[in-house]
Length: 222
Image (cartoon, rainbow, N blue to C red; front, side, top):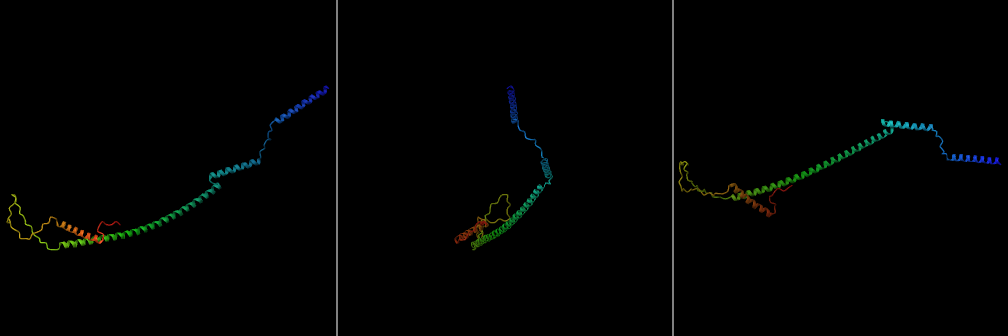
């Protein structure tokens, strides 16, 4: 009986130890197995890095194919842009020259028209002035026609001063001149002629105004 109880006790101890070990195994974290590096993968990565380093070196030295291709494309674009600019410039110059020629022709035509109009106006102005001068001359000649008796005015002898020398022969006082009487004008002959021309011009202007012809005035603007 004692032997049986002792065996039971040993069995319980063993079972409790197994349970404890199982629980410890369950609670222990499972670590991943050690990773083994793939030599093939590492070599391909090194090759890729070497290629990138070589491309970077080529790019820095200006020998990279993609860089050269893009530079060539940019040069082609630049050349095409220069050609377009040259064509546009030539077209603009051609248009400017055509416009200049047309403006020059129009200016020449305008100049010729205004020159002809100026000549016509000057000729008309001079013709009117010539007719007016001829009319003034005829009127003046008509007024001057006729015999005007010229009478000499009696001369008046002034008294001699004390310091004046005695003349060699003194005329008699009170002697009546037998010469015809002269008209003494208070105006000069030039002023008289100007007045006569003004009167004739006024008559001429009045007659032209009545007939509906434009009187002489300032030269009309062109």
